[in-house]
Image 1 (cartoon, helix red, strand yellow):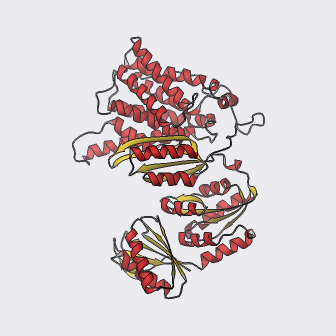
Image 2: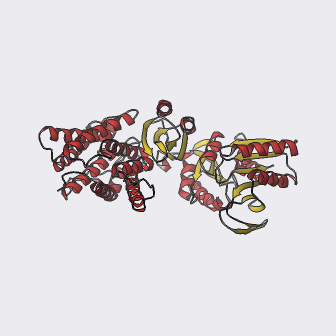
Image 3: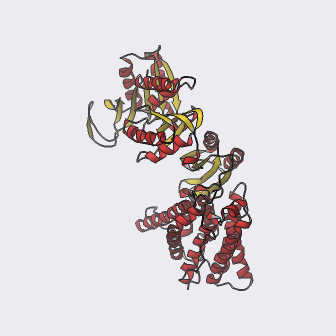
Length: 543
């Protein structure tokens, strides 16, 4: 029986919570009907808790290796809060991360927490969680968290101050509040379920009891009436009209004033807004979550507030719920990186952001269906992704959609295709026009060699600047600007009326290339876009 929670016990609790959420994930996903019935609450809570454990493990490795050189040990509370906030997924996951960060605010770098200290920390954590949610509702995760904290405080006030008594009181109080949630939210009552996020928190608190006492409390089943979506006898709750996508990103290089403005702006764009901050070794960062139909505006608000990254946009409704609207046309593009995602989104294109491991067929399929259009053009923007796009398109055609894949090999070819898209044309004619524009665009890019290799232009070494045309290296050099100008000269030697430049973080490179084009090729029209990926400082398209 533990008398206080030290760092080792905190680690055991987190791992026990992961095990409990892993076992209960499917049940929690089934309970999920609020704020939208997207069936992912259990998954999001599990992923968030796993991120907390991963941060604990990383901190332990750093401590063993002495990597920071400071000789000081980082509190387990600090590590788990940072990991949870930076790894939080979805609405419930972000609120759980805020609760853990609230606990860390009270308990990090302090003596091991006994019963009264834990009770006070739980109350503070519940209060900060309410503050993090723009429009809190009762009958939800927040209600369960507050009830657990109040029960812990009541136990201390009644003289039951042992850690085991406080932990058990918190878990029992949360469970009682959970059972009452259907009476507080109509959507829960209609579906015959308790709140999924609150149910997940109950599992986490039961894991705490198990860590402290060695035995988790016995509980009745979470679901009072089984619900099977798709059962003819049960009409599932449908999301109300309004916000249609979940937007979530991490925000760096910002401050409290800018984040306050961001919260105000996002609150006007949607709902389920949660903003949680945490200190990191490189400065404070925030996890931003909102449900909105104004995806581009939500991301743009993040850009104005700081540097958003790890941007995720997920349709809230089930994939098949987005019935195609007759006559509606859409373009879906796969792009590498957030900067290009913003660029394409600004042109009215639905975007699937490609990660380091590429993109899945399911991700492309979901975006095609979420467009709710009868006619959809898909731009893979990478030859290796054309088969993925084609398989996703084939699946979407089975849902009464006309889907065409224009096999663009580069984002600049995708931009050329988007530039000529005309919804007033017949769909087939529009696809042909887009394909012709993409094919007429010769593409090239400047990058940096990561390893030794033999290229068409000769051997290269790590750090060399490479200029590639149509995927074939034709220039190797030391200075990015010199390589870029040489590369453009080669492309334009075969003719060209317009050059499209997508410039990465190095704006000076873009300036140098534009100056060179103005001097060496004054008749060529130049279109410049900033926001390209850091790994590819310059992408070029010549038409």
